[in-house]
Image 1 (cartoon, rainbow, N blue to C red):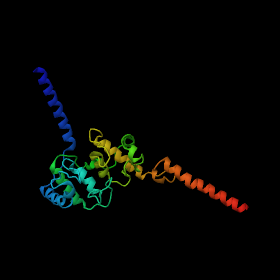
Image 2: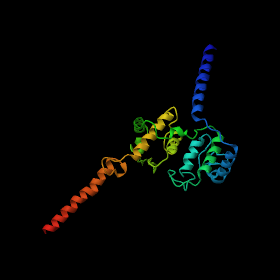
Image 3: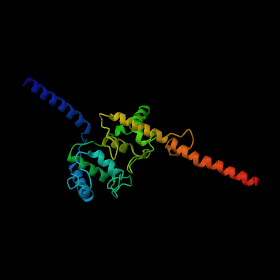
Image 4: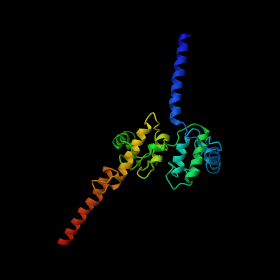
Length: 249
């Protein structure tokens, strides 16, 4: 009996501590007004329920949205990825179908269904963090897919990691906490809010920094540079050779 009691106490303590930490990391703040939630519900039923279900429970055409939080909605709808224009390996960025007020209403409705990641605090979006630390974090966690310069890259089965240069700070933060497409989730236990702010600072600084080596060729790395030299450099050598030969003849 004593052993069983100790096990139960240990499980309750561990579970309670985990619930406390995860709840504090995903709590929705501030609370949305009921009017905003109702407006979001109408927009959802008219535009999203076909794929995600009338109660956002998910269908064969779309996943459940219960528990995804306001951050996921703000990212997907705010970047135009949702609603999708057509089925495909990946939802692509396009002009948003809804304005910011409608997006906020949709986010408020989905957030009212269950706790989930909230939209980021504006203080983490000011690009005033530690760019050097952000560069290190980005290289360790993000560069293998997005390229060290945030230029994006190809993945498998027709999917890709998008370019990050023109993405807003809010959407970068929301992508980290929600893990859209093939991207993993970096919650506050993996990367703290300040870590995310440092990564955003690095990306903003890199986007505005000049290229000391001249034309950056899209910052795609040595493959693009080698291909450029192979086509234009070798092509120039061949052209000059042909010209000299023709002149001598």
